[in-house]
Amino acid sequence: MVIRCIIVISSLLLVSGCSDNSLGFSFTTTIAYAGEDRVIEVGQREILDGTHSKFEEGSSLEFSWALVRGSPLAIENADSSQAAITPMIVGEYVFQLTVMDSKGITSTDEVVITVQEQEDLSEIGDVDITGSFEP
Image 1 (cartoon, rainbow, N blue to C red):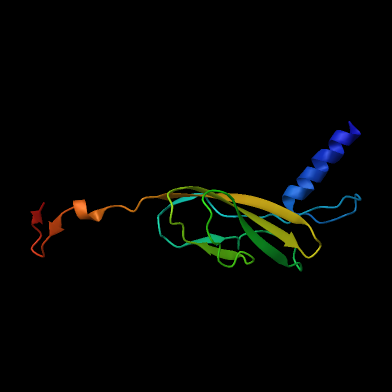
Image 2 (image 1 turned 90 degrees about the vertical axis):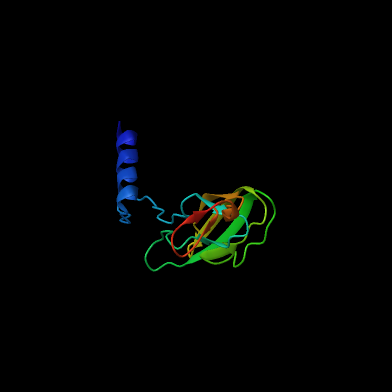
């Protein structure tokens, strides 16, 4: 029963962000956040944004972006909080963000970027300035 209570207490303190070490536990508050999954078009430049990653006050973070699944492509600024990609092949790409704080504590998160063909606007037709539609 005592062990269960300590686990619950340590979990509550971790969730609350408490860094009080009066119980003799070490709490990790570094959390990588790679952003929401999203859909883009082929050839669209996209920013991978890790700026919402969390870390202890007074600490600094090192960032590292890596492609873990998908067609090979270049990642611009892969060692910064915001990296950029321009996928030229349709498919699903999974990028992993790894953050490390000044104490050496690491955390990872992944984001899925689904790349689709560009929408063909030529089939919509022409619209003249009077508002009539010409297919």
